[in-house]
Length: 236
Image (cartoon, rainbow, N blue to C red; front, side, top):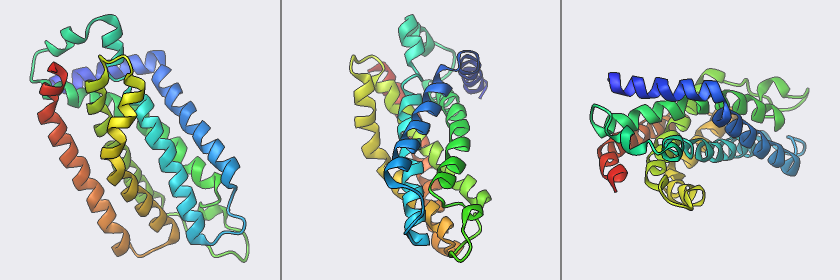
């Protein structure tokens, strides 16, 4: 456990000092939201269900792409400095190296998600506070949305961090990482969009809860599997 937290603390200190990863992911997520917002507009002429679906799709598109951008830097700093081999010699199992890197990637992504979710909902008019008079309106369940967002971001970070370790030594890693990671993360995208849109529509919790359970199971399974396979990935 000490190895995990030492590595995570090192990555978070570097991220806080340079802010390059945080600024890159935040800028990318904001740019995607802006483009989709200009292309799709607000909630004018849409039903509550349509607005919730468009807003959820836009928010999770931005977060998925931002996760790929953030994970590219997970091992790139050590690779560029020629210290990746020394990092694998760090005392402790190689699985701890993956978990430490995962926490280092997760921190900035959660900060970006804390900005992206409310900004996206307000931009597309999906937040309850933006409901116009005479329009069907459902109070925004921010606590449940925060739970779904945390589980979704964790799933993105777990998958992209693992594939970041595979592609870090390749020349075309910027293109290969999304190509490898996104097919595996399709279930997370579907579950997060369905859960988020369901909460925004005001569906009963019984209809949304299966998606939340699925996200939890996917995150746990991905982290366990990636931790077990990481030694083979990093040594290969």
